[in-house]
Image 1 (cartoon, rainbow, N blue to C red):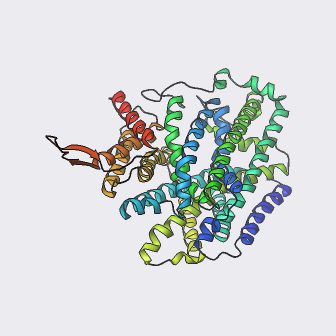
Image 2 (cartoon, one colour):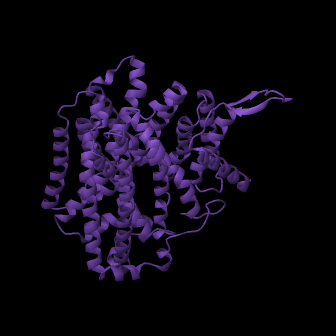
Image 3 (cartoon, helix red, strand yellow):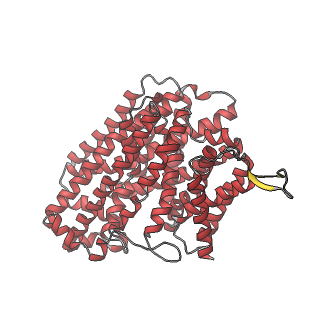
Length: 518
């Protein structure tokens, strides 16, 4: 990197911190700090949702998957199949209800509905899984940034961690949303610039498409992911993806918290709809980037020499170092840092909110979060923990890192089942729900540790079905009706609202998976 690149990069980072300091003015309490005083514009929240999804790992790994990974190609698009279905489910039912309850932590709802034990269990699962995943994300982003900066891995980790901590601590959720809007724009410019440069090198989009191997042009793998070894099975991503995305967008604090900051339930619905609509175009840009950079790799042996098939994630960084001109190189590096920090900042803010509202305040016995100082302090602590985890992640085996990224699918189904039953079934109690959660997580961990021939996307379905089935069965009452010889079972619930198809479908799918595997 030359002087002009450094000027562009440092100017961007300085502007983010200055913006955060400006947005911190007038913060009076935890509602201001964690949910922007519930005055966040819906369009900015929608953009923030999709920006958080676009991490530095996405910026680098999606093009590499399309261009070079064995079994890769356009099948990546199957990741997007279930997003519209999950969004429709959440828009019509879950999001308006949670927004109208004026929560700060989404886990306040299961705590009120099922009791302290259930709420705190879900909150603790979130803190552990999101903390681990964010630390690994910082490490992965530093692996990309380090060779471009010419810095050590440790220095790159500290850069990402410190900058994200500073502007998130100062500005809270307002800074997260505002910076995400800017960062998404920067990411689009960065990806678009890389595509244009690659097209110019290979002779246009037609030549890039022709250079893509025929097997990589296939967008759908009709495998089921049950009993086969498909890398991206269609049915697993369609069905399992629905449960995963419904849980992630509807019950994960890192996503729901910004929806809680909108001015009302209608605005929360519009924000989620916008986020869902923007996700596919951004993914298509990443796929186009993969096709274009793959063509450069195919046509230029000197580029193949610096990007080996064993290190395919070096495709994007090495392309930027080799082909992108001075000045623009700094801008695209800023885009990669933007992608990294848009994921880290939202995680920090949500981890702080759950820690304060679900653990610190009940322990302290008072509303210590009435002043934003408490939220800022916890944000700094979490930022330090995540950065420390990223620093030691270099000693982790690759299989350990991949395992940490699978933790989400072990828990997403049980968490979604808890919220669905809490909203839909009137009188399932806390003990039954907690046993259901344990059963749902246990079946997923059994499938994982036992190496069942089942794609991990199906864990989201199985965890949901077992959790819901166990909780409902344990909530059956037995009564003797007039004129009957023996007691009959009935649900204690007086009504099961619009979630009946989801509950029944999840249970039947889980039963089918178990029978098929057995």
